[in-house]
Image (cartoon, rainbow, N blue to C red; front, side, top):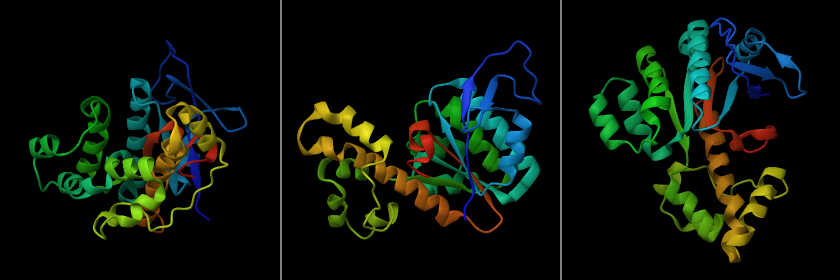
Length: 241
């Protein structure tokens, strides 16, 4: 059975910040008990997959991503690989070319579809992979195909070319509309009207399924994947889990 470690964090700034204990954060497990960074890290070392649910624009969150990833690499070396929703699957070639040192920084950053906060928040992680010659998996479905699902439901993917279907999981996509996270998205999309509102959580689900598929497709025995995704993709053991 795969072992997953959800990271549950409550922000608590401290004047006594110490690198060894990561005091810019307070950690809590799924039962609400306080957990030290050291204990969380020991559990992380025993996991197959870590889903780091982030707040995209929170700088302390990105700091902890870097700290945790760096510590995992120090401990496990080349048995670690990185993956992220911030890179879509059709960007895998250019991402791998960069982390393997085949292309220059300027070529990569001018041609990849980078998020607006890439330079401050995700580049340090990509550079870690490049420095240590680690795989970095582009796990997300291309946005244009998620848009197809939003407009037409999962059925819209059937008409795409075989080449396009390389960038998301095999059809049909497993989907449970009763998951609380998906049901709440349907409530949020209720004002959008018509067929598209029913497809709102399906567009989320195809992203979740794609990330899960490409994580597991890349995971070999004895390896550890740390995957960076928006918290909504892994909250409450739903979504990608």
